[in-house]
Length: 343
Image (cartoon, rainbow, N blue to C red):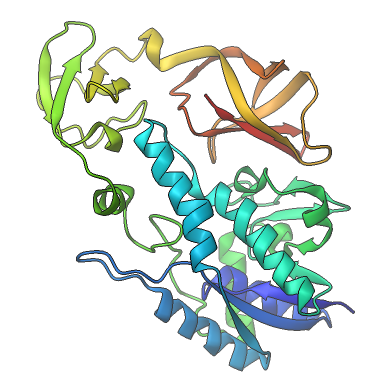
């Protein structure tokens, strides 16, 4: 059997992954990735609690637990990227960048250097022969966040949870193994700061200023915002614009610090049939060939048909709130082929 280094976050998913691999006869070593430890005003970073949970599971399984400190690289490659994207008026996905730069690059490289044959994580996905496939649990499937991982990295990676049909089954498995975190809640908020919401995080790192909210149809000022950076295309909640039908964000001007809204759900700005992708990544060959695909425009969105031509994508029917900075991920049957970032 192989020597497998398992990324253990202290959560139930990665803990069950480690237990399953050990049960299968692998030589398992746990690794806690210390990516972020900074507290924010009024908000506690839970890294020490998560590490304690990972240690408890490691003791229960009788495996070693190592700590890899990636804080500097994480700040440089994930956090700074995220902040730059928000400042430019886009809406990035730090989880995707974390997988690309940290879990399946830094963690993989460090593990191989220390004698691992393979790495494993608690992602809901499957990998076979360097190819990435959707998990059986379509609700939990995380291939959307993994599309920037390379084939070479996937050949060295195992996803033990890919065959589970529900999160309930995973928790039941944790109870079978006697794991202390079997009922631990899934982490919410930003991927690396626990329960912190994106607005709270950005307010600690980016200087913002109030501005006006304008109805794009009537040109009237309908409210005031506390920073255009906080708003994203299609957003309804958090506008604090009362009365009548709800407003939706349809665009924003970062230079003028204006957020534009509309009550018209059919407004052209909210619906697109074509867009341009940048930084396209194909899992197998680094790129994606032109042609027809099934694509996912956001996590948990249904797969829709689209055609890729010279970095431009055309949908069979208009899609709502295609947000610059977010990713379009390409599939063929149940295989994730790669994707690109909306310009």
